[in-house]
Amino acid sequence: MDYFQYKKNELFVENVSLTEIAKKFKTPLYIYSKATLVRHINAIKSVFKNTKTTICFAYKSNSNKHLLTILKEKGLGADCVSLGELLLARKVGVNPRKIVFNGNGKTDEEIKLAIKMNIKLINVDSIEELLNVSRIAKSLGRNPEIAFRLNPEIKVSTHPHIATGLKNSKFGIPLKHALDAYNLAKKLKTVRISGIHFHIGSQITEISPFVEALKKILLFSRKLKKQKILLKYVNIGGGLGVRYKEEVPVTLKEYAKKTIPYLKKIAPETILEPGRVLIANTGILLAKVILVKRTSKNFIVVDAGMNDLLRPSMYDAYHEILPVRIFPERKRENFDIVGPICESGDVLAKKRKLQTIYSGELLAIKGAGAYGYAMSSNYNLRPKPAEVLVDGEKFYEIRPRQRIEEIL
Ligand code: LLP
Image 1: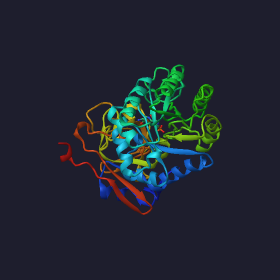
Image 2: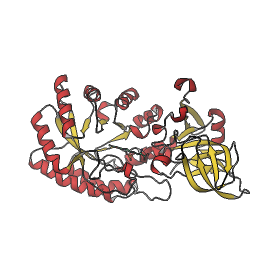
Image 3: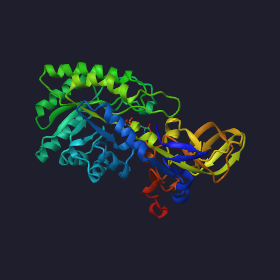
Image 4: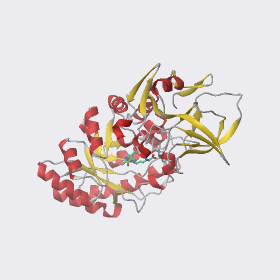
């Protein structure tokens, strides 16, 4: 459910027309709806309200400081994967006891910062990394809490680039080596073993992979118990899918209902790392038609390209595209919607039936709030777009458009 709706053939975000926003802030432009974000936050909080749960928003999915501040004010923590994200979480004012640190290639500098910040948990990705964390902890005279990221080897039906729990994945420790990892950590005494972590992939719309992973993790946690290794936290990662096209993702209610019984058996406190499910449908990318080109195909060439929104090029991802103004009398045609980048792969959408459209008119690319701006680049030396937040009747810039001088 989001707050992007047509009113008399004109697309609105909450109570503001997209045309009005484009007039003020130009295009391409990321636009977010505060009411949608708050609704999603409340929804996930409410289904876990009777459990001891920390929700750490995946900063990689969207790192706009203003949006992160809203998330913080609603009580969410941060899942960070880099020095930059740790520093950003600190800048936003997130309580360090609500920050977890992930990644399969943490540098000494990053580990040092995480330990000094006294964050909740470092999710250690390998036995090799454990030795690094241990060495750094010792040199700082600290005793950080860690979890191991385990790989439960679960097949998920998502794009291969975003499935992270497969047998040959670069992430996590295979279950068959996991006991060794915990025993080694216990022996080292430089770290406190507090948790268990897994993250099996992203845009997962079914419940079964989560449950299957939990079953395996529960079995493993029993082995730990036998060795008197007691866990405080179980971290189930992120990965919940959203509806981009016709998917029917598992509801948050169902997700909670099916996972909580396992989570409770594994450890007293749960950590979640949702990104997409909170933020994807909170944002759109607004683009202007530069021209309509007709060859053997019809192309709508817009001013947003793969540098602004990489997902369609990188994952063949589907994003719904809507005209900002509907003209009911116009005929409908098939179009490919493409950007201006010098790459054949710079295609935002293929074979979409849309009303005939003309240069200067606007298109809204939906579901762009997660991994949209976050994955944007300066490819072709194009400045990054601005970001705007709508709150009822008000709207304001939450990140300025990059100036061309900044990148020359
Ligand atoms: N936790 C870990 C350890 C992760 O690696 C990720 C995402 C998340 C949490 C958040 O997952 P989410 O709830 O958003 O599914 N760029 C891709 C998605 C890459 C996801 C990477 N890891 C895309 O645009 O679809």
